[in-house]
Image 1: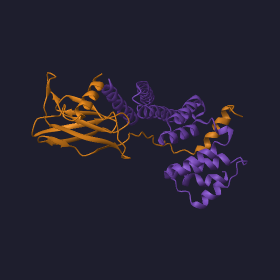
Image 2: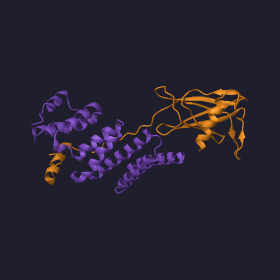
Image 3: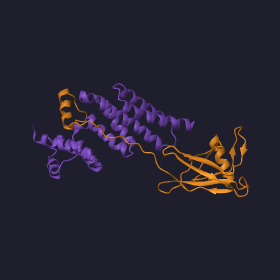
Image 4: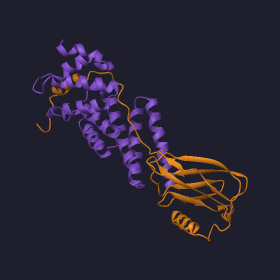
Length: 144
Length: 179
């Protein structure tokens, strides 16, 4: 539900002359290593208690934050913010920057895919000795 | 001592000479020493980190029906698949290896079972990464690493436990973020 609201907020924010009429916002784009946009990336801003997701073009826009009571607030001038980008299957990325005022376009963020590797065994055995064990055990082989 | 014993030390180090490789590759599938020759070539390729050759010799070993249910080769095959993001095939091979674990030499049972469980956990994790936030796959990956952790803790292998703990922490962090 939170994500749906955030998506709606993003859609509204992208309409000209609406939510970011005051022009205090940060925006950016998230791509993968092939240069393709990554949608539904979770974007959080700290401090700020705001969580949005990227759209189908990998774009996000943050034009408000929330205070401790959950009320909307503007981005604070001359403040350092950290934006965290999270999506399952990708390495998390963080970008820290100084927001001065007005519009700020962040550099394009590139997410790297998560991979998982299993290293070979360190058993230094002669594998060909293993077939003897099977035959000794008298096991029958399926498929024979 | 068989003729092939002379190649064991070099194969273990991944240092078979090209002439040795040629000799071993010439052992025909109809000869009794076929599996042993290919196993030495496989070991050599693995030690060298030659991915393409590893796959080639695994394929050749599996041509013989009696090798197709060998848990050691199945585990090697499963590892190859998981490291190439072929998670379904990795799970299939690892599950088969687990079913036939009783054929593993007693001194290798612990380490081979650890490998099988690690591959299974990694394969579920890989499938989860490729999914659209499928929480069932996430749960399977967590269970897989817990099974691996439980197994390696029986021999106080803290290095392997750390591996499991790191993956479990990563997955549990993701689960929290998704909830």
